[in-house]
Image 1 (cartoon, rainbow, N blue to C red):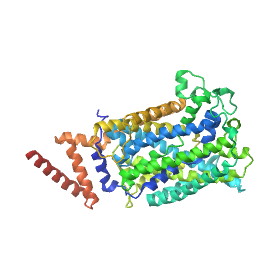
Image 2: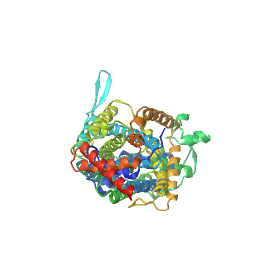
Image 3: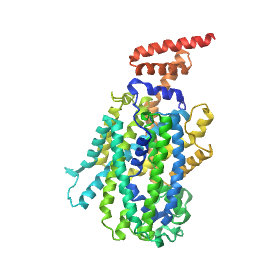
Image 4: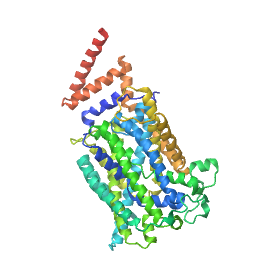
Length: 543
């Protein structure tokens, strides 16, 4: 079996010219940066720093954020190099198809579908929860949940998913503009809370900056659980869990790393970006810089307002907790508003990312190719609607909190392979134009790959078990459907039957796609392309 068959970069780019499966380029670097900020700055910015300070690193959580930002930055550079070289929808899936091969690309695509599907469902669910909290804070005793014969149905996730599904079907540019307006408002709320928080900072709360290592059982707010909740590396090594100290800084970095996830979603829009060779690296870099600065500012305020020991006594510490402990309870309303707005933008970007991954995989035939047809507006409307319905149903009916870690392991597996793919592609195709190149190759890509693998080892044993089950389902789908229906596989079999190099068929497809884009019918375009390529081949042979 040819499970390691690879697509050439030229073939990958040529397939984007397919008239029925051609996305419209409307986004610029600022749109991409806003998307990255929109998906990374959600409810987590008001909670993840406080939790990392309370249960992992103390005031040294600031160092944890810097470490996470560096690791994420190296992975982001790897994505930027690939996206500038192969500006095609699909992100890590598409990049892996050209470097490692079809089977691993399928697994990455399968993981990313899981990541986007679960993340979209989880965020839509929490949007409803925080919306209800916000209404209660303002004295509105209204609930978005309804009981139907003992079955609870939450209307809020359905409303937000339906709204953005309609907007994304209308057009990606319009959605990006709306998302940008909300993101600017969200950043404004974060900066306002940070500025106010600086007035409550006490230097004594930063001492000791790196608390001494402490047994996890002695920290009040941490609930010691069973083997399934242990990080995988602790279970393998038999080490006793500890917090604070150097170990706490590193485990804190593993926790806050997930606050930076978002640029991989940005990379899925490469095929809809104008001048992608320049705009994608700029958009990813600018978005990551904004996110890093915002998170570090929030971490400084959170740990400076109150002692990490006081935060550790709370059940679920957050930035709001810090304000409550210093008597500024009014800030809870502003923070709740910021969370609702923050999650609103995250839902939109995740719905966009989910459909672009499914679009790329289905265009390659690994899922039914009918999914990849676009509307007259150049939007994969069919996938967008189906994805919206699935996300809305999951978010409004199921308890999905236990599956949130699945988002992280799916994302990290993609980071790992993209980082490892940079030096592979440099050796295999040094001739390709790269408007952005990762410096210090192969040191930085290998560092990014090893760092993301270490972060994967910090996820729980139960998460790894669930991940293994999802992979088993993915392998079943691949060998039961995808392998036989792969577009690349069909081309290889056709080339063997005709006795011609497969590159000849790739050239025919590329030429036909250009003619379809110019308005010719598909049958006519293919016939003319086959004739032209045959003439060129004959002329080359005669020489």
